[in-house]
Image 1 (cartoon, rainbow, N blue to C red):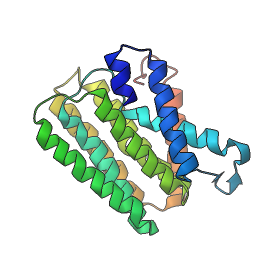
Image 2 (cartoon, helix red, strand yellow):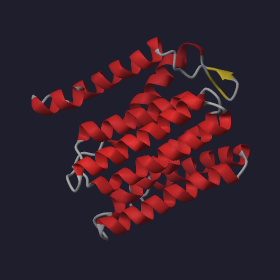
Image 3 (tube, helix red, strand yellow):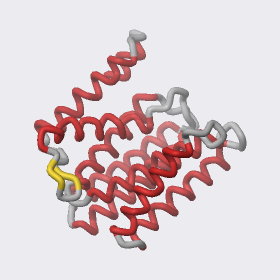
Image 4 (cartoon, one colour):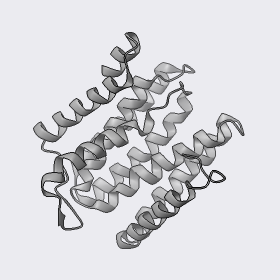
Length: 217
C-alpha cells in the first residue's frame, strides 16, 4: 500500500521506508517475531533494532527501480523452496507451508501476468515475505541467513550485472543456476561449515567492492 501511494502521489522514497518500518514493527511487536540472540550471544536492547534492520533490509532486496520481466520470479521461488525445505528439516511446519504457499501464489501471479512487466509493489511484497520467513528460521539457527543472501540477493545481483551484457533469458539461467547451486550446498554441507562459508564469502564480497574493477553492487 505504501509503495502504491508513494508512486501515485510521487512522494519521497523516505515514505516507502517509513511504511516498511511500520509493517515490520507490526510483525515484531504483535507477531512476536524477533531475534534475541545470535550464536548464544544475547542482543538485549538491540533485539528490536536488529530485527527491524533485517526485515527492512531483505524487503528491499527485490526492490528494483526499473520494471522487470516475470522471468525474474524464478529467483524468489528458488529462495522460498530452500526456506521451506530448511523449515521442514527443523520441524517448523508453519514456515514450510507458508513458503510453499508463497511459491504457488507466485506461479499463479505469473500465469495471470503473462508477459507483463512486474512493478515495485509486487517485488517489494515478495521481499517482505521472504524476510519474514527468514527471520522466523533465524530463531532456530542463525546459519539460515545463508538462504536469502546466497539464493536471492547474490543471484539477483548477478542477474542485474549480466542483463545488459547478454540476453535476459541467459542471465536468468546463470543466476538461477547459482541460486540452485548455493541452495543445494546448504543441505549437503554441515551447518558449521556453511557458517564459515557465509562469513568468508561475505568478507571476500565486501573487499571486492572496494575495487571498481570488480564492483557490481
